[in-house]
Length: 224
Ligand code: DC
Image (cartoon, rainbow, N blue to C red; front, side, top):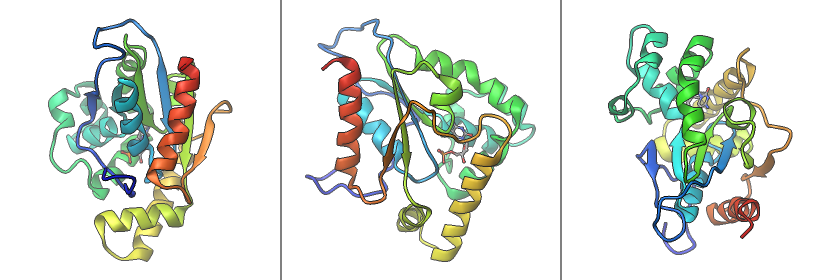
């Protein structure tokens, strides 16, 4: 980020990262989960990385698990059951095609079941964690201390995607809407706002504004 001028989209390359240690650099046994859900290209990842860095929490981009399971090829259930750290570093996982493939395998109940334990353990690991995805506050960690539902209009999200990847604007909007429909319409763990989630509509927000709102919610829950 430069000065106050960060703009959407901001994407990191790390899937799971330890952004720093909480407090004075000592390991601690704080159990504290920030669950960030919302549709594609709403700004979840950007906010999650910023919150992890600011509060010294571990971060897991759970979309990357589904992307990696889809990219492995073959039977997606077997792929999800045998996922390794190396799979999360496979090239091309951030592409729109990989996201589309991930959205398809994510509708398979056995794939979701295979990835659940890892996500739950990550969420409750000592030192605290931020997870972003579609079902973190509803299914993976309903007990999360902070739940955010980050959204933006389909047009704004499509515009951010278009800035990132180019292509034909109308086609990008159609892709965004199709992915929304699949992620929200599946039978198991669909994209949904937890009733106790704070909604952040980033349509008209800068990155800094969105991060400031999220950070205020986290600071309040931490009693800071
Ligand atoms: O957040 P993303 O675009 O990287 O996610 C890719 C796909 O993975 C998304 O369209 C649906 C699926 N996904 C999911 O079903 N549950 C999650 N917690 C995260 C992602």
